[in-house]
Image 1 (cartoon, rainbow, N blue to C red):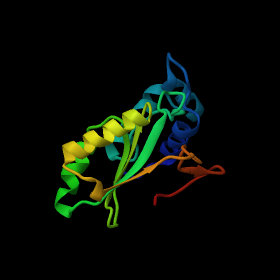
Image 2 (cartoon, rainbow, N blue to C red; image 1 turned 30 degrees about the horizontal axis):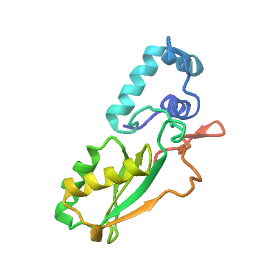
Image 3 (tube, rainbow, N blue to C red; image 1 turned 60 degrees about the vertical axis):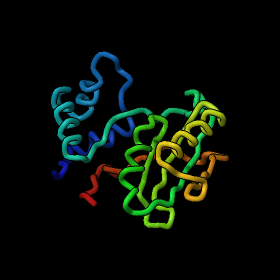
Length: 164
């Protein structure tokens, strides 16, 4: 699927200006794009089905949302275990990202919890369920966050980017 100009404008609005409108957010977006709310929803569903759009969700301030501890974890796994371990880790709702890397430590994921004690419990549960030991896991706890929000420029100064 090759997104058209309206799709790209919609993607930019979804990132930058999603309306906090309980009754008809799709209609509000449609008004900004000169299309109906039904057309907006149709385009969102098409963008999701094509894999361009994974989902629509808020970016929360973790500390204010009750997440007081988080960490980045790197695992050294044999190639034959990567898929299995990744699926186990993905079952934890406290895991926000999970990536395969071209590195000795080949699976990296982020984990959040209420506090350090809960984080330690989750890490132990992951080790137990995956059959891991301390020798194949590096934990890199967050000391300070510099950036959490990510936005992809789909349009720029009235123009839209052509794929890539």
